[in-house]
Length: 336
Image 1: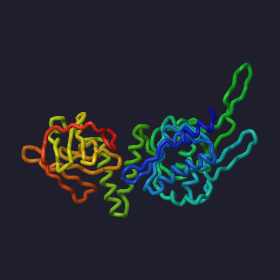
Image 2: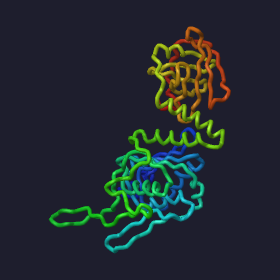
Image 3: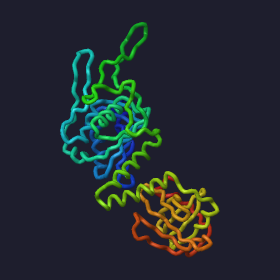
Image 4: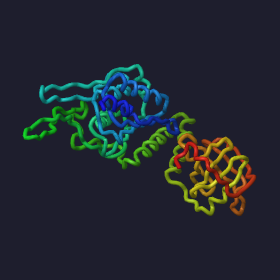
């Protein structure tokens, strides 16, 4: 299969775009492919989808590198003016090639922070260059593990007797640090294991939004941050106590599956409930952060359920029946 066909099948490295709770943009980029009209369209489409988000997370944890011209093209999205991001020293000609971003009409839309870049020990080469450049220019916060440390581009040289060798023919020189990441990797601003990097970035966004001067934004971020932390570290409730909540609350039915409560509506929406306290739960759905609050009598038996979002006035539903409810329909919009 030709390289161009492989690139197209992999969507030029863009494996996922998503808008997370709190209007956080998430983009998984698994490679920096050759720059051409098709790959440019993929870049523009991915970033256009996320253009109205309040923050951006770029995931390079599975990105082993690629082409420097694609690094330049993507970097140009984040600088309003032409910006010196890197140099390449070419050994054979003893020349230095400067790399500058190109002004783009969309650049001012991405000129505000925060931008978070996720990295791992697998992140290498061009992916490291992008992270290193953005970090050096204080344009992004790097979260994750120390990267591979592969800065010098290589070429294959025939050394005779059937042997070949990979020999570096150039090296990058960052205009600010005057060095590169060869052998030492890109050091993250926030060091966490790769599998915790996304959670760490999301919490960073919420903490940043909590400090907003806009009261509505700050209050919403506090709510999201609390709910998110609760989902990461659920409150423990044993199965016997969970069974007490099963029943019909004004048409909203609570069932139990695999030792989890499930919230069911008449129109077929279903989501796992994550416990926050003895009587309070949150819906485990990326785009649904409502609280489900149960009111209990002196014996601990629920008699009413409330749905609450962002500390607004909750809606109450009286319990009209109890007992085990069985559903065969799969969960909707959930990560169970």
